[in-house]
Amino acid sequence: EITTDLAAAVKDADLVFVAVPVGAMAAVFAAIQAHLKTDAIVTDGGSTKASVIDAASQALGKNIGNFVPGHPVAGTEQSGVAASFPELFENRRVILTPTDKTKEQATRQVRKMWEAVGAQVTEMAAEHHDEVLAATSHLPHVLAYTLVDSLARMQERREIFEYAAGGFADFTRIASSSPEMWTDIVCANEPALLEVLDEYMQDLQALRSEIAKDDRAAISARFTRAKDARDHFTASTTEKK
Image (tube, rainbow, N blue to C red):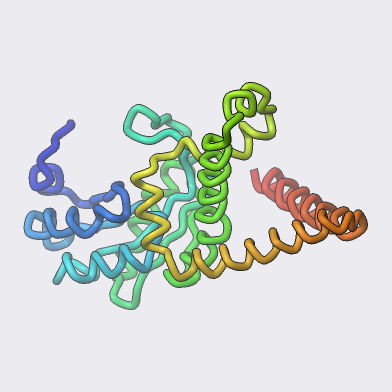
């Protein structure tokens, strides 16, 4: 069934999955709180966890013990219902970040839900989640958006995009993601993202210096470390599948 009425959507529900941009979580939690069953479990799919937990704590009141913060690390650059497909969560990681108020039974139920659709479920602290995802997900999106925006504003942009190779498409694919959703994410995870962004900018500046000095040994060493690290990552990912 489909409805745009939040109260009707959660009425009599045993489990509610909130899948909206993190900036909209607070409003949704507040809108559904009075209509939840006493024992209804609520979970979410937000890419930041500290901000969502804070929103839930303020809005859900007595239902907070049944709130299980979560993040399915899945999906594509497409968004909306039409972008879904049956295998979306198969062999993909889902991170749960239960708080000290979260009931163990609620966490077990949410874990079972995700495992039922083929996901691999892990648990960690919300703060650690936000630090890890700032580096592995949020920073890459920032880089992709910024690169495409920079090239699009260059005077010779038409020729640049005309001759863009497969590497450009691969690297910038995620720049087709929802701007609304990702604006919410980067603002909600500001401290962790700024820290990793500053570190990356230092490395980028160091590479610029190496290029300016024609320091082939340093450049090659940097590229080799990166290749080895990525090859190790892709090999381990293949083994898990």
